[in-house]
Length: 385
Image (tube, rainbow, N blue to C red; front, side, top):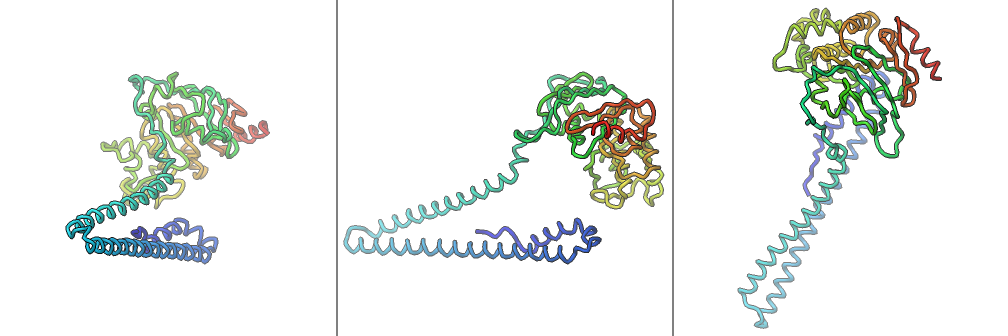
């Protein structure tokens, strides 16, 4: 049985997992405990590899002993038959040849049985991914996304992750006219992010339907729909490359004027120009080298580069200071598009024309704001209590 794990590679993999949170480990003074945990894990793996090696040696020894013993017994019995004139020497050689072929085939069959068992084990580990249905890329009819109004309608929308689990959203009805700015708020765990993922087509509703411009999302097609939308989600990522590459999402034909215009709308242009390489400044994986607020504004600029007609922001300004948030909100307010913003901060909620408060998977309050209201969220929470 081959040894598929090597101690240096495995130890590097374990060590890399620890390095991901090294800053928090150092700040909380847990480096000794984490180092001891890493050593214990490494010892467990080395012991596991030793057990595998012993099993391999035992298997090979038993295999060699069994087949060699069988060969000696066969030759001894054949020799007795030759002495009794019941077998010829030629028959012995033919029998041994066929017997060796049979033994080798049986040994290969046993190996294949073990490989199949291991393959099934690996398949169970990735079953959730492998068995997930792919997104539908075809549509029933050709639709020009530019002709579809960026209005949103949700009818009796319900969602849960599996049968028997509680509903995250249940029988939710919501209509958002084209061009309206709506803020979705509520306590943590009430289904705000799930609602956004359903709206973006990342999840399929358990029941109910979503209509964009009066067209069902399934009829519109995800490829057409995603040409209309710009998004900034909580777990969005940047990629290794320049700032301009990330804003244009590595477009083959990049529009530098639109890149700068998007950065200006995200209140990031001045900071980029202050960098030594400007828009050619390199960004590491997951946005290494940028502050939390700069990452969020860069993600917002990337969303605006698409010139979307529907903008979905899930806590997209949570890391911004007050001044940058005011500038970003003022820029977004001037855009002629439908905006759906998940937020908790009063400054972000106050910029919306309408506030929808979720509570336990349903709409608790639907408030139309005539003017900026800093205390909307607190008042809505009180009404839901």
